[in-house]
Amino acid sequence: MATITDQEITIIQPDDWHLHLRDNDMLAETVPATARCFSRAIVMPNLVPPVTNAALALEYQERIEKAIPAGSNFSPLMTLYLTNDTTEEDIKAAKAAGVLASKLYPAGATTNSASGVSSLTAMYPVFQAMSDHGMLLLIHGEVTENHVDIFDREKEFIEQHLKGIVENFPKLKVVLEHITTKDAAEFVSAASANVAATITPQHLLLNRNDLLVGGIKPHNYCLPVLKRNIHQQALRETVATGSNKFFLGTDSAPHEQSKKENACGCAGCYSAWSAIELYAQVFDELDALDKFEGFASLHGADFYGVPRNTNTITLRRESWDIPQAIDLPNGNPIVPFFAGQTLSWKLQD
Ligand code: DOR
Ligand code: ZN
Image 1 (spheres, rainbow, N blue to C red):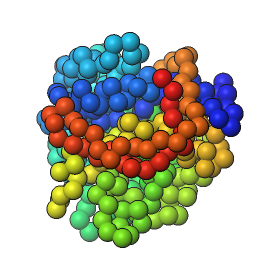
Image 2 (cartoon, rainbow, N blue to C red):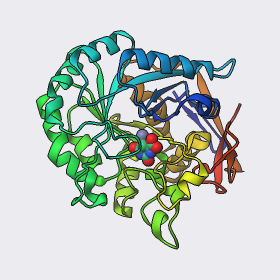
Image 3 (cartoon, rainbow, N blue to C red):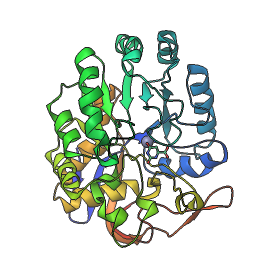
Image 4 (cartoon, rainbow, N blue to C red):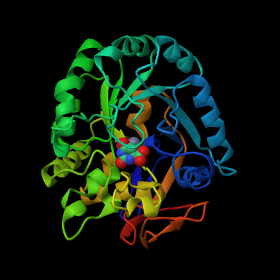
């Protein structure tokens, strides 16, 4: 049970239900950044090449575990990347190896999604296997057809694909990842208890004006792209309800500064260093700090069917500035999300 005063918030330790850690030397940056705050994280499998089977997931898990700082209780939760070639056997073996979930990227939807799925209905036998084995389906919910406007791609995905998946597999647990629209919030709210959604800090804090007004802001560019303010407001109202269908998933997705500030800039916001403080700021602004612990620390564990954490973290009301840049282990800089901005809550060590 959270304790909240004007100066201090103590909540059960949170988990991050949507995270990109990348691989190899990057892990020395990304793993400590998330472990500073989160107990567990669902690790996205969009490496190059992607994590498509149990053996690759276990090897990746080992590389991540080597980067966990001494004394940290952090543990990564692994996922599988679905391709057109994923088999029911792959699902069974992955589940037996402890992989909790598989990620569906429509081919071409986002970063490293080239090996993703090109026909959703062709995947139905795989979805059936996931349902049978109790593996969650995590969805990047955007259509990829050229003629569909980028701002409409999430809504279209719900209409064209998600409704069918949910109808055909009522027992399959589905997470619509990083939702960005009123349409998604309403769909998930009205769906069965087996359908939930993650929400990122950037989609709660920003709208497309923050990407495009006064010059292009590449560090606010992510996918699904920021939408108009009515959608941002709908997401904020949704988390303020305290509904247990919505939980924390940062989608923290690091790209080097030179890859973001580029004629063809990469999608992704690196929010790990300030994630919990960013969410605290949102709930505080909404006067909904009493709903913060549920969103950050309880709803995700309950939906995934894993035990809730028992230890706690404390945030203090304290102004601090997010750094302008961080040096990566390879020496190149990365600009964190909300760089240079002041936050009003700070995680205590
Ligand atoms: O902005 C994003 N970045 N969205 C995604 O779906 C992928 C992610 C990444 O891996 O960089
Ligand atoms: Zn992601």
